[in-house]
Picture 1 (spheres, one colour):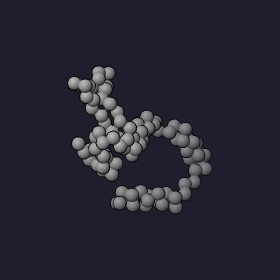
Picture 2: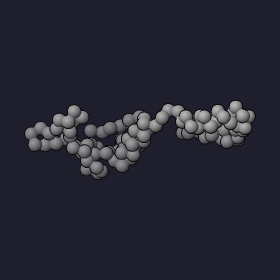
Picture 3: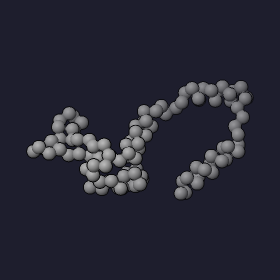
Picture 4: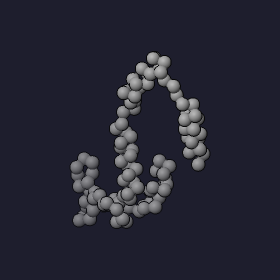
Length: 104
């Protein structure tokens, strides 16, 4: 079975097959704790290093706070005191780089 283009990342998932034995294998145990074994054979899933890295990145992003309260408080204090001086060149550069990433 091929897994293709999950989350628009065809490069990460489209190349490997389940049970190909290329990377760390996970044997079949259901989330509810029941064994996935029937008749002496076990289902296995093999994930590439890229897939494991992507999975870890997704978990880390989901666990990260949506708002960095310390940074918000710091910037708020700078704005209120009149000391916040954003660098317009850096802002423009980041906007252009973001646009280029979206186009490619």
